[in-house]
Image (cartoon, rainbow, N blue to C red):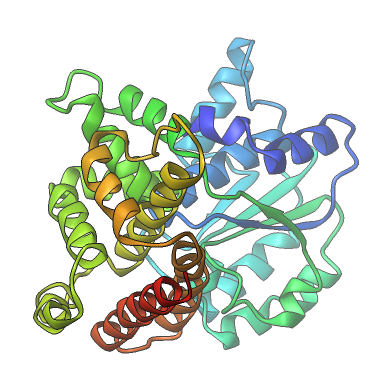
Length: 328
């Protein structure tokens, strides 16, 4: 994870600010990866104490203590796998007035702030606006939507954009070295992850990624009459976000094959099925599919009924494909 994080613009930006000791008093780190958000926050927190890439024994010890969450001047809230609540906010306020013990600053790391209810977010507003001297807040969030506008106006946003498949594959190769996975396994979950290392890890460990890829291709290559039973079977998946992203990748790969001579699809191990999709759809319907999937992703985020959302999505793409063929 550290290697992925270090190559992001957000990390380089904060690193430069910390090296010059000209950082803000509050940051919001946005990263759509619940599994690795806390690890990412630790990587960013180390920058305030100049131990991001430890060279001395002291820096190494400090880095290890931040990882273990036992450094007195870098406090983590809430406890792992818990949500930030009003009691946590009150503890932060109490601790923030106490002077640093081992350094010249105190950093409060809070994640995932997107899961904090409005009451606990409001409790921190004044502290975020006017923190005590030498106090820095580093908030984490997997999405910006649930974070109050009043909070957003008081923090500097650091956003980690979705990673490309290649660095995710490299990260998986490091994490699962010696485990019984093939390179094609890493490539499939990386392509289906939506740019999230955590999503790729979850699919790989869950062992359902191959079935998810098959489901996505079944939807892309189906005929209108076979869509309802397909949706009935596939629509109950727990991996809604990953399925939609896989559909996006398949339609995008199909468009690339149609448009660029000698191009290689992102899903390289699925070239045969990508070719079928490229033969089935027109260029305009493949472009339309990207726009329509974006709409579906928003609908799912706001708790749309997924089976219905999925059926309407594929129906719309099939309809657009039929219309564009008639126009040709």
